[in-house]
Image 1 (cartoon, rainbow, N blue to C red):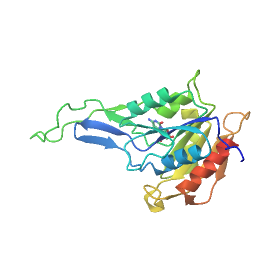
Image 2: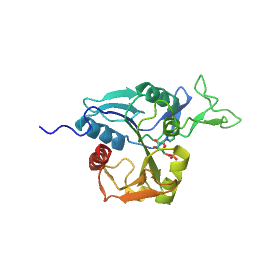
Image 3: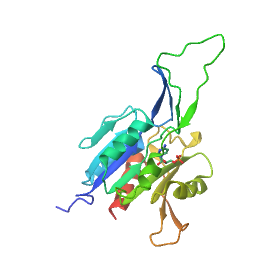
Image 4: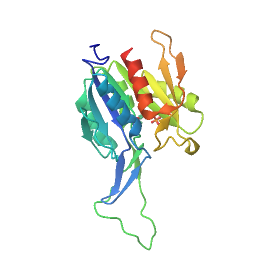
Amino acid sequence: PTPKPLAGTRVLITAGPTHEAIDPVRYIANRSSGKQGFAIAAAAQAAGAEVTLVSGPVDLDDPPGVTVKHVESARQMLEQVKAALPTDVAIFAAAVADWRVANEGEQKLKKTAAGMPPLQLVENPDILATISKLTDKRPRLVIGFAAETEHLIDNAKAKFARKGCDWIVANDVSPATGVMGGDRNTVHLLSRKTGAPDGEIAVDSWPAMTKEQVAIELVAHIAK
Ligand code: C5P
């Protein structure tokens, strides 16, 4: 039998949204089904990798053979990601909330005559940037996602400098595409050319396909 292409490698994947508590019954979240990240976890596992999937709250079954860590918030996600290192590859497909509520209520907030209670927001850690910038345990290949509703390629290219990752999977998630929550995806794989001066980025545009097919293609590129 032919050896599996990712046998002997460790792969870490984040998926789904994060939930940032406002009080015990309310939260702030991003829209994310987790389908693309779960599909990548399943494809990497099928390719022979030892896979850890750190997932926010989703309505999906754990992929068989994958170690799944369930979290709620961005800070918990970062903690589980760090605990999963070292890995060879890390893929950040989660839609992490950029902000959390600073003054989280210990009790359910009540309507008052004064109107809505003010919510103070503070920035969440950027998990992708944090891991990309590690000096000791940085995975050899760090892949980010860029879900955009306009200026897809330009916005994605700008992320390389900010995030410090090696590849970016860019996808258009504007409502008309049906990507959000849907089963299909149209992606562009952006990569920094190895050995090339900063700023030289290759763009590989893939045709529309199912999220499972995107996952299989991405795993094939990783194996290469
Ligand atoms: O620029 P933006 O934050 O939207 O970039 C998205 C990429 O960064 C995704 O790969 C996402 O998983 C990652 N990210 C993260 N932690 C954050 C915000 C985004 O890992 N707090």
